[in-house]
Image (cartoon, rainbow over all chains, first blue to last red):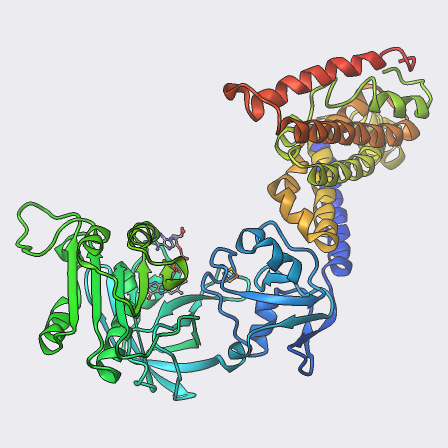
Length: 367
Length: 210
Ligand SMILES: Cc1cc2nc3c(=O)[nH]c(=O)nc-3n(C[C@H](O)[C@H](O)[C@H](O)COP(=O)(O)OP(=O)(O)OC[C@H]3O[C@@H](n4cnc5c(N)ncnc54)[C@H](O)[C@@H]3O)c2cc1C
Ligand code: FES
């Protein structure tokens, strides 16, 4: 008897579950199917896309590459676009990135806008010139225990026109993401004049998708990248003093800028301040010291904040912003670029503001 | 509540005198968490009304035709039905129906109001485990309602819950500018205010004969 209770019980429960599943599938079919939608960009001929994905993703599928440094998690705020029509209301995930005036003007994060109907958007013309490159790894080496330097040779297309200080995005295979991949932003560390190659310097984040992928790259691996991105515009005036302050992975754009300046405007005054924890975190120091010997106008300061007692380090110690405070005297013509972890950047900004620099004179990338 | 009352009376009673939140204190978790803004409170209130109105009668049908003693007579004949008692499965059946409907609500909200979908966040899928919803079905069984009564009760309990969370959201909006003792900010004062509201709702006692 007991058995029939279980059989009837389990049987009717199964029936119920099947019924509910059917109901949800039907609801899903009618509710999650948006059909074909049109995306009009800057008054050009509209693109026809399958509705239901994010604007960022739909544009990517049509080879329009919006910067998306965080890969669509609404944390970087890079994927700003202006939505003129469609797109619905702004989401709570987006509001922290915009002022009220921007919200009224229709600014949105492309990764958060779902394409559900025809939309019209406005994006900076320069995004349209961002390309996707097939590349091959031509060198990969460890700089320290957690930093790797990887160089890609561009294959198709084979030329990139990047400004100094810009970055690229690497397509990282990712089984967890619905699209099968995510993008991660990495600053270009090679010189802009090396138009057939791109080099990046990447710090390993434990468990990080993008950084682990880069750290496991080997020569001859095929990698897809998009770029160039980035708003930084270097002042090319040879008399303009350039202050660079960085830490950790923030070295990448600094290396790019220094080599660019030494190549195009060798007399230009450039100061590099680099903060690290201990001697194990130091890289590129010899290279820069050699450069400083050649160029009297190039000054380099490495400071270690977390020195072990038995260390042989004879150079400066303590946090890097304190050295900036002591050694940097802002000249009339100046430009500042900061790149590194947020606490370091914030500390340096405070120091620079006390020295009379205005907020809009300081350009930074936090990561 | 007794089982021979008019469904309309049940409707009024479940909103006012027997408010599922303020009298039975069911569904407190999302009530406290989502009552900060009126818009989101209204959204969650509407979702709860929908889920309760849909699931209470469906669970009534399940209970009546499968779970009660002798309910299976229509299927397996009176002799066998008197021996098979599926009542022990009631909770599982009820929760399955609730979970299914919450899924549908999620699809609907995501489609028609993405802003609300993000604002409700985890509390939308969590309606599944909102005790007010399961409470609705269990009370309906306990009080031996008929089908019409269960519809009235489902809708009334949902509306009562929505009313309570809306009133709370309105009060909390005002509370933002009042001086609340440090230690009571947020959760603490919300619980106290809920208690006061519950007492205020006692004033409705006696307006319907239940
Ligand atoms: C404009 C721009 C330029 C950049 N340039 C460089 C560059 O030149 N070199 C470089 O190495 N990186 C650079 N980054 C950062 C890089 O894009 C990735 O964010 C970083 O590599 C982590 O990605 P991931 O996929 O490895 O980690 P994820 O899989 O995204 O994250 C894994 C976990 O680590 C945490 N996490 C993420 N970042 C950090 C961090 N910095 N410190 C500690 N924990 C973290 C996350 O919260 C998460 O829990 C740049 C970012 C931007 C926006
Ligand atoms: S906010 Fe980073 S991609 Fe949209």
